[in-house]
Image (cartoon, rainbow, N blue to C red):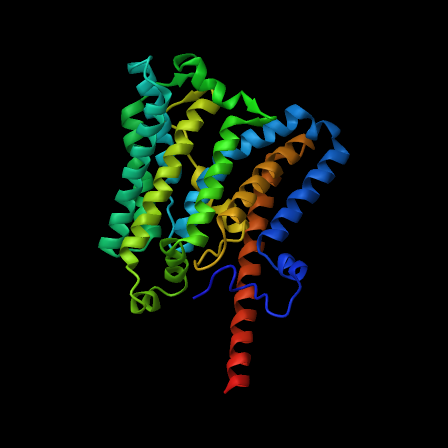
Amino acid sequence: MTTSHALAPTTGRSPFASLVKQREVPVASALIVLVIVTTIANPLFVSPQGVKDLMLNATITVIMAVGLGTVIITNNIDLSVGSILGLVAFATGTVFNAAPGIPIVFVFLIGLAIGALLGAINGFLVTVARVPSLVITLGMLYIYRGLNNAWAGGQQYFAGDRPAAFGRLSVDTVVGIPIITIIAVVVVVLVAIFLARTRPGRDLYAIGSDDQAARLFGIKVSKRVLTAFVLNGTLTGLAGVLYASRFNSVGATTGTGLELDIVAAAVVGGIAIFGGSGSVVGAAIGAVLLTTITSSLTALGVDKFWQQAIVGILILTAILVERIASIRTARRLRTSEATNA
């Protein structure tokens, strides 16, 4: 059973060497280089407002990448996250329109509940029907999108339809950091602790490495996978509420196509597309890298086509690196077993 820590053996290595071997280091290094190069070309890129915009742009993607990362670690995927976000964002606008005086915390709870319910439906279908999650969630992507289209129709809710205090969540800062970004950081920390320090969290890695072996070890695979989908849906619900706070309008098309960006962020951040390894910290850094690439290329005046092409190259590179690392690890284990025999 493979985890990110198992893939980075530390025996006989200095702490610095072990740190360099971590999956998150190349992604973080690429992010730093990108910021430096862009700043040299355009010093305004790291102005106070520029940094704030970078954090705001990455926040929604970070939260969703963390949620989807927990699903991918189990060797599953959820392609319906963009549609879930759209439904929750429109529900948020609807709630404020129907009950303008409702406490904001209740709106968050409603959004989290909707997201958890939709994630639970996905997880239930995957674990009970035993159909590949790619197929199930692709179908749910269209079902949720259809529901949102039927519900919203041509209606949209704009910034003026929500309470000012709700909109300020994406404007106000604490020591220069937007409030919604602080929420995202808290999410990353909590989920990272859950995966690394709790039995259910570590079970997700075991399931992603080999679900049959996990069953033999007594792990309740279906229950754990369902938990991952519910967690993903809940975090996507949170992202949907924050989306309604961050952007000027929500409607039937909100979140369309976002699922591929979230998958890209998780994979580029070092989470193996076939499960079993990676971390949500890496997924968060991957999300920041992808949104920063978009901002950087825009600041440099590069055509949008090349932005998409670069994201595609990053995904292929991440998969190739993961494949090479897996082959090297398997070869090292075989050599070790032969030596000990």
